[in-house]
Length: 119
Image (cartoon, rainbow, N blue to C red; front, side, top):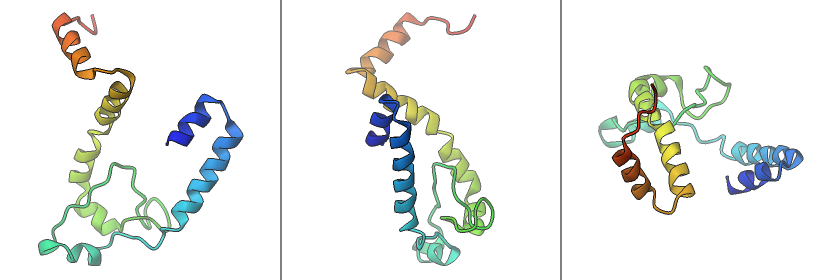
């Protein structure tokens, strides 16, 4: 991600294309990993949660060879969607903590000011 950020800042389109190609090649090395019902059965009582920040590559649904079977994804779909719903807030928190030295103090100040966001 750091390399991608630097390429974006430099407006280096060719560098971004090369990085994407490199990342796809790296991902291809892990095609043997696939979350299946059989794998989930190996967990305690066979009931571990399948969690993913989404979007997930679902074998036979969103792609030919994905990272999870349709059966596993469907069994945990609601829990996975609930988990993924936090993603925008986590990203915002990461941006805030990166941009400001004291994000907690900033949030306290904003709460104190209690300005209406929408009129």
